[in-house]
Figure 1 (cartoon, helix red, strand yellow):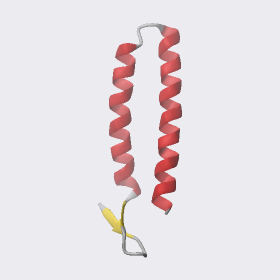
Figure 2 (tube, helix red, strand yellow; figure 1 turned 135 degrees about the vertical axis):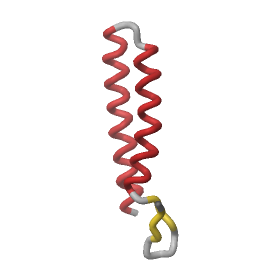
Figure 3 (tube, one colour; figure 1 turned 180 degrees about the horizontal axis):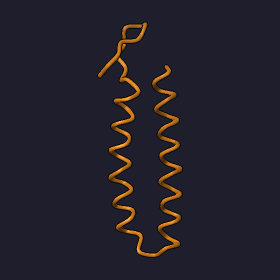
Amino acid sequence: MRLVNENGGTKWSIKAVQRRVGEALKIDEKTLRKIAKNDKESVELQASVKRNRKKVQNRVTRWCKM
């Protein structure tokens, strides 16, 4: 669903963007889990996924506020 902001441009609703971001991250996590055989490795990868999710989420919220 797209919303129209004051200056006439369209922007995605926060829910729609979150859904897209979520799908991308889910795929990411699955592949990372398959790759990470080693415990230490998987912990590092999970941490990086979390960091990336936070970054993406911040970017999304900032973008939706514009």
